[in-house]
Image (cartoon, rainbow, N blue to C red; front, side, top):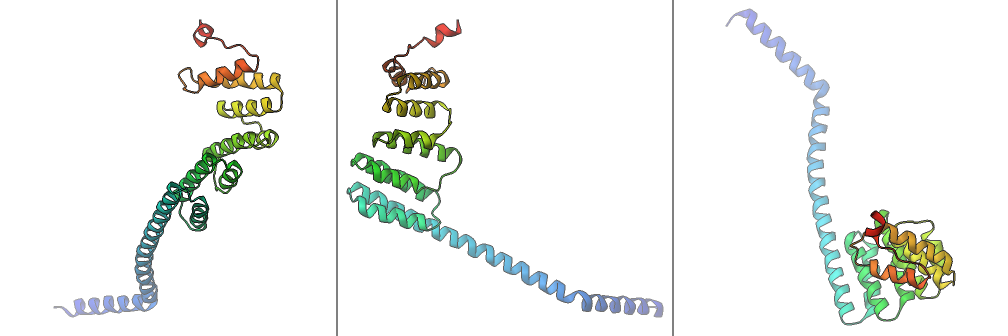
Length: 213
């Protein structure tokens, strides 16, 4: 091997050593952080799986309590679910509990259960509509109207009309029933009931097919 080649290799090795001295700690720190990230991700996954398994167990306990008509115990178990990170299990448990409370003749309890849900978006709209119906049943139509506000989908219009009927405001109710019916699909199963409500409010039901012609 030529002397010049040996000098070139020596120079290259010195450059490598110099670069490592300057950047070695950064490389080491990067490797450590990478390993920590991998282990952290694995720990998080195991933690999430554990929490979901625990939530599923609690949800099954809620169902067993409801089947045995033990509503007080079910209320405690639902509260425990809401206190953790149970996600959909907490919502499902609360919905099942509220249904059982209504069937047991405890609409006020059902309202409290539904109000405790951390609902958003379309799910919140459905929960608000359910609460509004229960408010009407418990003699609080004004609260139902305040809760729904100007919501104008078919279901909300129908409930608002129900509240107005409960207040004796037939003309206003009739107008909302008509609007709700106009927004409802012709094949919707609840159409027959809505038509009956409109008739009871003094309105006239028209044939959708005739309107198109």
